[in-house]
Amino acid sequence: MELYLRVRLACHVDGLSQREAASRFGIARETVKKMLRHSEPPGYRRHQPPKRPKLDPFTDIIDRILADDRTVHRKQRHTSKRIFERLRDEYGFFGGQTIVKDYVRKAQRRRALCLPQRRSQAHDRRPSHKSARRPPALELDTNIRQPLTDVQRPDAYELSQVQIPGPHQPIPNFADLAEMWGW
Image (cartoon, rainbow, N blue to C red):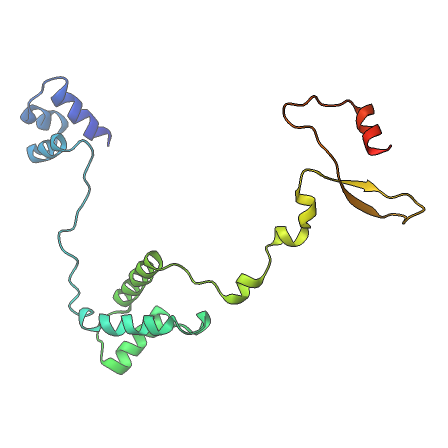
């Protein structure tokens, strides 16, 4: 990336010709021409998808196996190795395991990007850990715990609504609050 920037600066700012820049930086003139054509390195772009003469006749079978696996439990689904073994034993596939593994990985990624994940019904029924620990009455700002007197119930608390001053009201001092709460 540094060389890319230096070549562009030399040609555009310093006024070097493409031939002079190629000889100064030790690169081909075509490379300098490409560097001047793009503001950032374009990277490698494939014009056609790669040809897989051994695997292409079996991609429909692999897709069908993966589609059938969506209906079974996660632990019962086919691994790429098991798909390879089925292709070899049942359909006469004579390619390698790696090409099957790569295709299965890409197919699963494609599915994960296109379809939303389906959550189980048991997962939907479970409360979240935060809501299970905190009762809803304690989430409000106006709820304050006040101890009951020993005569009513020792070690018990009740929730009571207390008026808290709004943003434009003066904040009372502690004595006023204590009097308001009956302390």
